[in-house]
Image (cartoon, rainbow, N blue to C red; front, side, top):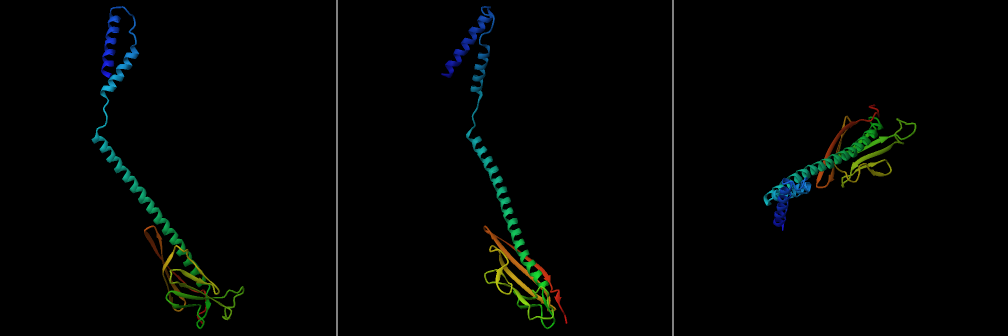
Length: 217
């Protein structure tokens, strides 16, 4: 059908051209139509489709680009989760360490009545005078507060009457160590971890504190 249409169109073009040359007609009829027709025929004859090899190569290149973009996105996502987990761990352990420092500083006592006592390496008791008008020479009205690490990895704070955990449930306190120097200087080491996905972030913080209201006499 395409070949018949093409031959018919050529014969019509020759007839119009002969009539235009002999003067039978003054305008070349259907010029725009002929031009459009031949343009379509030319495009039809010269358009080439993609070969199977070209399709396969295109698919391979697209696959490589997709894998590269996916890998970058996955790495960025993992980095964000890791940084977020570290920030949470830093915040939780930092809060617990600050809590212990503030209470140790408020410890009261003297040489015979120590302000801080460590019965084990992961346990610490601090003597605090909670009265509005502290009576530093009278230790009978003081309150003992304490910090210890539980078997399930929680940092427990006892305010003299009740217990509470200082860190969120997602934080595992892997280590809590107290050491005393000169019976009053307290060295603190706290380590914790937080799991996210198939990874675990760990962090260790150190600090030193001493009871300012303790007398050496």
